[in-house]
Every structure is written in C-alpha cells, then in structure tokens.
Length: 256
Image (cartoon, rainbow, N blue to C red; front, side, top):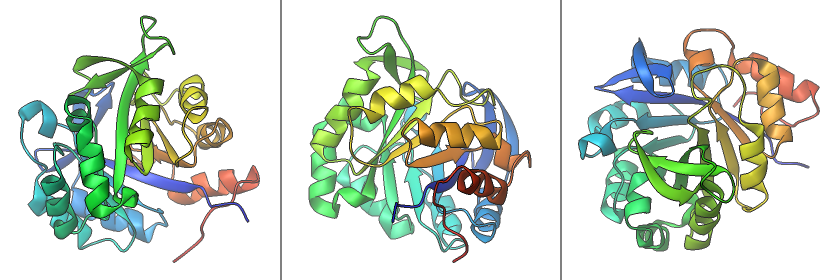
C-alpha cells in the first residue's frame, strides 16, 4: 500500500503570534499558535509545522516557551524551525516537545552541522527547509534564499536539496518564495526539479489556494503538502484537502 499523503498546516510565528503575508511581507495576525495547533490536531492534520520566521534574521533561538506550550496541545508530530544552528539547538527543541527540527540558514552557513545533528539524533528528526525562488543565474533556474527570504544565498536550490540529503537530512521542505501567500498554486516545476534529485520525503509549500492545488503538488512529486493562509483564514479545511486528494486516488489518513 502506498504511503499516505500528509497534510500539514504551517504556523509562521513572529513575536509569539501566528502571522501570514505574501512573499513573507505585509504580515498580518492569524492567531495564537497554541490555540491553532490544538484546532488543527482536532481537525485531522497529520502534522503541524511551527516556524519562527524572524529567529535567524534577528540572530536568536526559537522561542522555546511557545514551542513547549504548542507541543502540549497536539498529539501529532510537531516540526519546529527558526534559528537552528547546532545539535544543541535541536536537543533543546526536542526537550521542549518538538518531534522534528527544521534547519535552513544554519545549514547554509555551516553544512557540516547536518551530519552533526543526524549522527546524534538520527535523520528522522531533521528537515532541510529550502526557501527557493526562481533565479535564472542558477543552473536549475531556482536559487536559495535565507533569513526569511531576505538574502540570496548564492546556491542552486535543486543542488542544495540534493546535497542536504547526502549530508543526512531525512526530509526536504521546499517553499516557493515567489508563490508564498499568493494562493495561485504551488510551483510545480520546482517540485518536479527537486523530486528528480532527492529520494527522501518532499514537502511542498507556498502558493496553495484551492484543494486542486494540493492534488497538483502531489502529482508533481510531493509526499506531503503544507499550507498556512488557506487553513488559518478558513478558505479550506483539512478535511476538504484530504477529500480532494482521496478523490484523485492518493491515500490519506483518516482519524487518529
């Protein structure tokens, strides 16, 4: 039997509140992370991802108190990212209740940290978060950004995802910065390009606006689909997305 497609709400957290904008700008409040995580768990989400979107930019660690409170409300896997730069950071997040840690800027600055983390905790705990945008200067046509999309990392996104897997990450979270918050659909070309180079689970993020968009992302090669705005503001429910995936012939989990 095929592995079920995971549907994952994303909590982009800034100053202790969930926020959402377009292309990571013009952020507006979307609620309390603890309350939203609990609601998504009850609604049938397969996982919840918590990203402290200003931690790296501000040069600080993820707010562990909020992570601990969030972890205490959900009974599904919780992935936490933002400001992760070392195995010690991952240890602290796991102790706060996270099941997995996502790393982005920290790995770009020091790629060997990936192996340090996975040797200690196993590759199942580490997700490489790739914030990518279209960049004709890169061989694949996609480049990597850091600090919440504020800086160009000068890396090819497809090659970086492949290298991250070689170094030991267990999953890749691919976020299209161009599509982020637009609700115009996932960047299917980007998903296909990364899928062709990595065998670990691939999570597609950025651009979801309709249930059909999630189906398209899976058919382009995603193993899991992640979204924020459409869930936070009630455009779509977890159930509606799973219904669309199931109707298209993709296995989903129902109930816990």
